[in-house]
Length: 383
Image 1 (cartoon, rainbow, N blue to C red):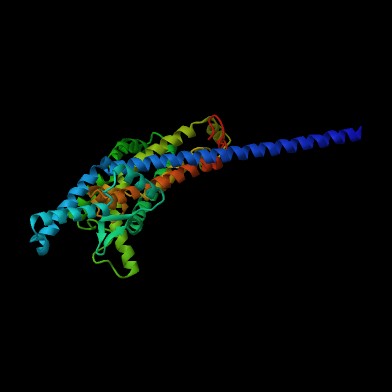
Image 2 (cartoon, helix red, strand yellow):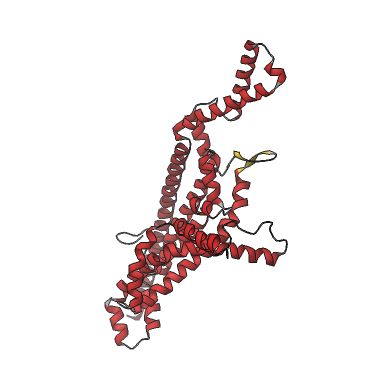
């Protein structure tokens, strides 16, 4: 009898082990399948977004006509200013001009159909072969777009990382404060001021420049550092911090009320749940309740907002940086749009698209780590 029980027990253990192995294998297969499908979907989204950017930046090929006009005008001026070419017979001069125009159009790739070049633009953009900018050139000629971006990126990251991180954490702390004092004077004040965030940061920036730079003359009008730039490292940092006061303040004024109101609403929703009332009845402190029962359920939302915040740092703000004369990526993009500089526009878009796709992909796994209700590749409400 004992031997039969041992045999049954052994058979049961073997069956359990096989079941666990099968379950683990099924979970791994599900995760791998989900990862592959997710990557393919995001890649297709990036391809479509970048190609649409190429079409829009080139106005469906209309920019080619603008380029051809500029080339023809440039060649005509060159011939008029060249004594040798100017004195040639009209027929020879006209033939020479057409040949020079043809060579210039070939150099810019305008001798090929736009549909063919757009596919080549797409391939180069997706492989991060960002090409050269013909409008934002240096003394030695055209510049690589990669070098332009690397040159302007630090300025954008310094400004917007400082402002947005201060904004993000300040809004969280203010929202927690308001959720504990629902209906108080400060709560009503933030609710009243929330619509003021409909105005962009550069709108507040104009008023700040008028008050503190033009009237009071206590802060600079714009720029990143003083002119000429200080040679000493400490003086350079202090000058940069002084120049950051107005743009950082403008960003905070434009968004702090709406951000605090949004998070305060989230925290109020979760703080009214039954399990929060039970935690209060157990005698838990308000900080423990906030940390365990209010902040933890909202953690996926907080992570999402923080991740998208980090992505926005790389894009800059074209009008905002132009108002403050800040030498960042946003200002470069603003200039590129005005000059029809397709390589710079496409490069900015493809970098943002890749960063956004990677962030969205990683967020799915972060959700599963912070929220046990989320299962990667699961069914129903799971991800």
